[in-house]
Image (cartoon, rainbow, N blue to C red; front, side, top):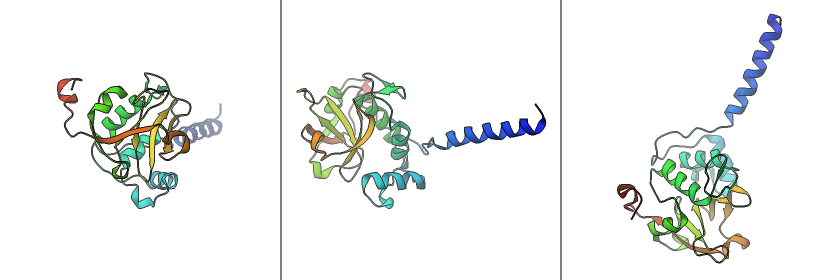
Length: 189
């Protein structure tokens, strides 16, 4: 291979690899810290949530969502090859807010302070009763009536709370209690 062909191939491979890498959004700051989002992320999620770009303030939250968006659903999953609703919620709360919560939906319901839907803020938990099972699905509230969750049919997506299909299953919501006792006791409340 001559020098020009070698340089051309090297340039092509570098360009391809760097363009793939640029799609991955880095989570800046530390868990619990609010950092400004990248401009493209703020633009994207402002459009999805129907809010002004200035309202997308938690860069760690939206970078986390960007990294996980489209990950397929897998019961018991906790990685990019597949994740379930409570696994996604547990990972998000830990990586974005630095809060340790139990792994299962049936335990996560016990670490919230109930509130009314109108009082929801970013990071609050939403619970749904699917298939006649109480608190069988969990999601994380974003803003303007939207939440992120691991859908069993579509993977990690953002959904509007008042979606006609999902809202009829909406059961309870609330903020994670400041001291759940979960992290300190190694898993039991």
